[in-house]
Image (cartoon, rainbow, N blue to C red):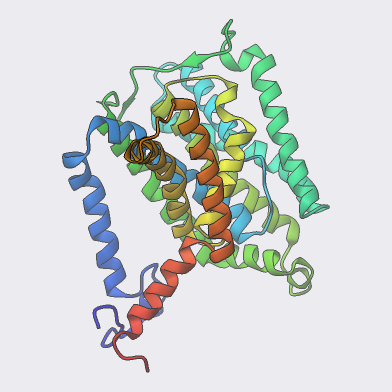
Length: 358
């Protein structure tokens, strides 16, 4: 009754093709944005900003980028951590070698470096697919680990290999407190997500989905597989590269190549699978699952053990957290293989009919 289209008439193509054609969706998105920008900074503690909100925003951006490649274009990638590392080190080199360069420009340049790197390692997608493409992108991960560890030029000849940034500013405003870091990440997230949403709704997105469903049939009807696949790698790598620069500059502040290991790539892939392939909202839902659940388990397990008279050590709690986390992932994939976004879409569809089934 509250989520229906009755009386919402579209009188132009522009109104019919807007991102949120239903007025309730537009109001809901506006309220969520208002809540994120106004209410959350008023209520959240410093711990919540640093442990939950900032990682969630950055991981959501990275998951959206991975979903462009894996979910919409169907190109399996295990090298997302490498693209994040290239974005982080590219932004760092531009930021440090060009004094006075604005932080936003450095982030964009880091994303462009990741774009070039992604296109380079996306070239095998023109000849191979499936498991073979996954191995090719995994090679990008190993290559980036070696490159940033052994070539000291990327770390400005740092003897330890660890680098750091400080005194960050954007548009003349300092980015030092946890609240300012959260708001800055949110301001970067929203325009990029809107850009990705418009791309997947347009002609380029339809080409990606045609390649994903059946590349031979897509080529027969005039879609150029090389153009579609490389644009998917380029857009995905740019978004993931910007997310990697944010992760390094805003969340970590000091990092080394191990910060973007192959485990990071698998975590991003899990976000996309759990959140929902081929869904922008799935990136947010998957990021929330991956970021929030381990913290909740870490807080809940010691309390649960004490409730039954057991003494849970830190190591036992850590191992139990990994076991429960992995078991929940497997269980969820069996129960709903299309991800959390499918549950969300089903709920919205039922609301459009409730309380009248016909």
